[in-house]
Length: 329
Image (tube, rainbow, N blue to C red):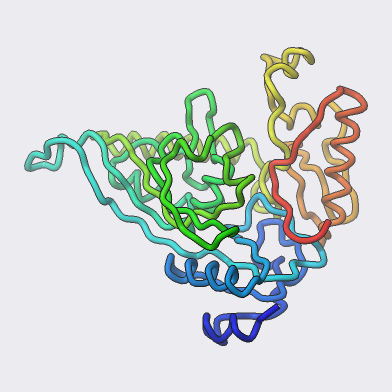
């Protein structure tokens, strides 16, 4: 691993060795990165990825640190912390009068390391509708596109639904390309780039304009309040661990109101509050695993395995993780 050359190109004072990844994840779990670099803008991100590719250094991207579980042994390669943020209103459609009214839609550009919460606040303040459901949601825009971040699915509140185009970095050939939203093949909790491992550098979104920003803020705050009532707050966790079950399974199991909530399934299995080591299944929402007492990744993994095995044995369900793994497991 050509660490010295990487340091020389990126700047020796900006590249760290053996950086504890527990400091950079919502789980507060994870061993060290062999080398660690924080990209502060898109040019930083480009240079780090291209250099790692050219020097044949294995690498992963870490965004906000949600939806990931890092191995206790860490990652034997480069971890790029994506802090490349920035948002611009770059295009509007409609006729603007003296009061600024008449705009029908607008395009918003952002860097992939922009926090989704930050993007939501910007668009609401601009009176643009479509991404207000992201208020208070953890993680970056790049990570959100990878999993097609969402809230009220039945209302079509998916991040991918508002994407126009994106610039991607391909780790296989070290090249960039611009693609439209169809390229991502978005689905529930998934996108094509989960398989291709391409990395979002920049994204462009199209949003609708409304006259009353107060209405947008109220809707966004109502969503935040509802999430706070349903989800564990103020404790180390990484968001929902498992994807929701399929509609067909909900019908087969006659779940209440045909809910596809995996939290309901885990509670039905009697595992709510189950603890292994320092990790515990939340008493508030069973699809969350909490770091309640200096948990290790192995503790979390054992709980995940317990849930999957019991779901298969008792209900013939094959649960799939929503979180991503970094390092050796």
